[in-house]
Image (cartoon, rainbow, N blue to C red; front, side):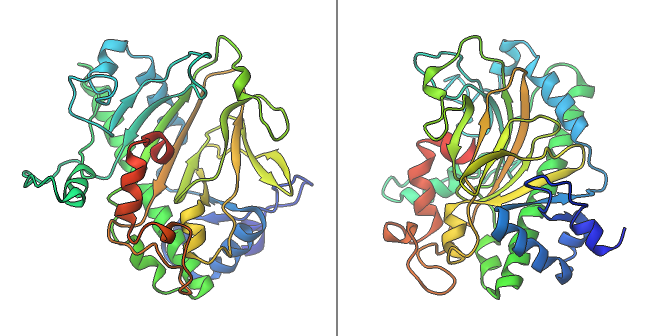
Length: 343
């Protein structure tokens, strides 16, 4: 296919048929021809697709996810976050089981959180007066991986999602570079030089046994699995072949085409939207109730710890800037409600 056919597939009268589909290699190689296509798709729809990812198979990822979530609870509990298993040291990285309790919970999903660190600094000088030094240390929490006794599975699971994390991080950073070129904001990529707080969540939405009446949308009455929301940072999403994701477009929620076996959805959240002077929308989205176990993978790329988020690229005070100077201050308030950022 020629360039236009590749970037703008044949129109089939679908609402999102015009969403750009950007080849992975061209995005990562900083081929500037893609920049106007990315920008136009983001402005019109709030997201775009990255396609044709070499040596990547979403079906392999989903198969490993299914196998992990089918493990016995005591095996998964060995790597559960400390909130669920006080005997464990990991606070953020690892397994976070959901609770199917319609009386006390809203969103029922199981999560496995993976970050950029496999090791952390060996020591930390305990100074309770320096909360940001402690936070810097905490955010370098290393990943934990399943140890099932099946070496083939354990090795394959770890290597698959380490590679998947790197692919998504590459996409997130390349997108920042592309949007910076298109909008002539050369300083934007410097805010994302490090990614201490980036996170990838392996999500399973199990079939609910009972309907949670609090999960009906206030917007249009649809029964939901994931509440309507706007993200905070840069999101790289895999839905595999699982429907349910809906994007708000022209004041109506519409199903987003699935990512399939070799593609990703990219969108931005409120924090990044403010940094680029609200010239690109942070699309509101949700997950409608489905009658099957639904799997997806979300990756979030945030600014580095010391990134100045108080002012936009044009110098305007951002919404976050009314309270915070650097991203580390912002994230501190969100780590107490970890689901809002990572999950």
